[in-house]
Image (cartoon, rainbow, N blue to C red; front, side):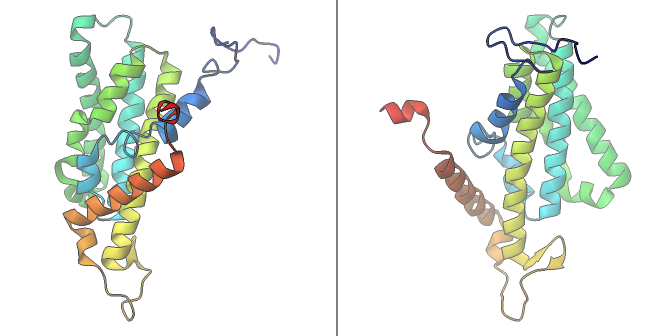
Length: 222
């Protein structure tokens, strides 16, 4: 069994289940082109649900689930889906996974479903999910498309979790309902759990990540 040939990338000859493209695709979604911190996509839900870390984590899991599932099925059907109706098919696939997750929340996590409100359903219109299906899954095999969906979903979820952590910590002095900053010496900053706090926190995180990432190759040449 050890002598079985693994898939080989046609362009570079790299071996592996994704033809040598798995790690670059993972890095692209997580860091190089992070959908939230670098491309600044999907900020509506990022601003709306990050007043608590728990909300941020659940929304992040929802996006990972939808991205992976929709990318998989868009890729599987890419050769049989007529080009003129491809976007309708993509929306239908995405909506199916969103509804599955939404119904799961309502059945097993009702309190969280009420807190997130319409924002789980709005993942259907999230440009991150639609963008990966259209730009990547339509042109790549299923396994690599799942890696891309997981990478972009995880990249979004990580930034969401960081924003939610600092907003809850500074806004209430707690994290996941556990007191971290004692009220005897720390006065909670109510601004952080309001809408302006989300803009401040997300803006600072985007600035820090872009500074760590450094300028693009095109910018260095100028």
